[in-house]
Image 1 (cartoon, chains in turn orange, cyan):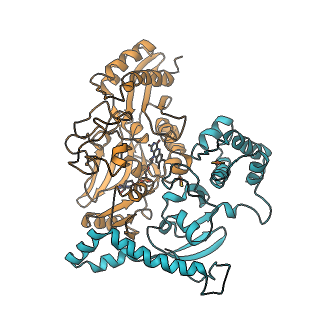
Image 2: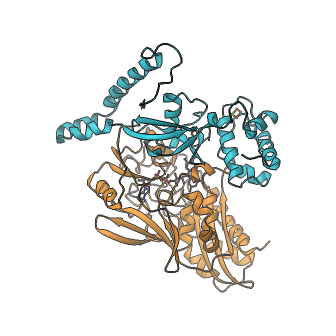
Image 3: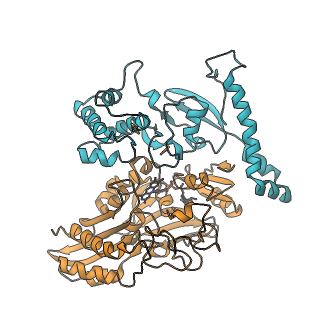
Length: 327
Length: 217
Ligand SMILES: Cc1cc2nc3c(=O)[nH]c(=O)nc-3n(C[C@H](O)[C@H](O)[C@H](O)COP(=O)(O)OP(=O)(O)OC[C@H]3O[C@@H](n4cnc5c(N)ncnc54)[C@H](O)[C@@H]3O)c2cc1C
Ligand code: FES
Ligand code: FES
């Protein structure tokens, strides 16, 4: 690991100022992604701004929404009473991620900003436009089993690895940030970016902007929900495909639905068209299958991830069946 | 490198001041500075260009922390990039905690920080100021094994033993957290600890026994 200077400010403003002014400075929260990348020489900050002394840990009600502090740990958030009562889908998604130890360290803010697990990004000897713009995408013609089927570009076909973010996308979250130019709110759909020509820019967060919290608006998705994660082993592995499904049922009819997928794109992939289709339909396997087919429109696979074109719709159907309690 | 302050140093052989560890420590201190320079041409050049010597110096500055490790208070001065795992193993000679992967993927380095299980390989020691750290060395009560240690022996919860300290620290936490109510739950909440030897069924049995025995963990 390269040498770096370590600072632990007590105020958000000092933390923001330091990262804004110093090109080589970065925030560190749980450190579970950043330290991994630093050890491998993929990210090389010369100053680490430890934000753990900032008061950003609380989970509370705020104008009807549930506000989760950026420093709330993944594990404690998953088991938080308010989260379990109001947004159990988020709890399921969090518990599907990493391991108990990592969830005790990882924060909600850090989780959203974790980098891709693409092996070409991780291997500094191989080309990767995300790590080193202009070097090319090694995965495009390489081993691309874990890679995207939606929203990819010639420059990058990596996927966003977070489970938590898939649930946040489905639940219409808003990210609260504070930066050199003041505070602002970013709707979750606009938080992460597609790769386009600039895969090294992964979110719309500006240099020096600190995530303060994430807000989840009140919604009816407290009962018929399911986070389905499909991976190479039963636990402690990243998703090949995941689906966050939430239904508001009136008997056996769907009033409204929320659906998002993980492991398929450079950002959590919200399935709005399928959601709209489901509204007002009966909660049956037939409807779920039609919705899944709609959701998969426009998918494009590569040499090694063609299986995702089949696994994707099947996963959507299964997640919806589990959410609805349909056998 | 951490340098222990206010502490009789832990060398067991030789007179104070002639301890082989101390010489080694000094050597590492110098060599790590040299290595750091070798790896940091950018920074050194930039610093010279921009007259940022101060910043360059501060990159080598140590961070002072006070840790409670297995019930003992330790005042340490730590280089920022030292992980908690390296601090324990390399500087404090607490080698019970194992380094398997060093990247958060195996669980061999699991310790408790303020009672919660975490991975010491992905924790910076400098970020643990004021915290209470428990390692496998701090689990037994004197010569009395912790019930989980005893159960691992009874149930053959290991073969080579490399993953075992991490497994045991994780297993204790698993019960304390209330995640040991069924075989499936134990498997899920122990999934962060990989065992190359495949001792998994016996590990589950050991945990079940401690859980069902109702002993205090
Ligand atoms: C072996 C392993 C398996 C894993 N498996 C999974 C999995 O299955 N599913 C999953 O979702 N995740 C998984 N993870 C990833 C894990 O969830 C992330 O590493 C973690 O959530 C990152 O959070 P952190 O607080 O540790 O972030 P850090 O490592 O501290 O930071 C990550 C990034 O976010 C920035 N940052 C952090 N907080 C803020 C803030 N408040 N404002 C602005 N910037 C900030 C940092 O500067 C850094 O760039 C796994 C990790 C490992 C090591
Ligand atoms: S050594 Fe820390 S998880 Fe493997
Ligand atoms: S006992 Fe050998 S790795 Fe677990």
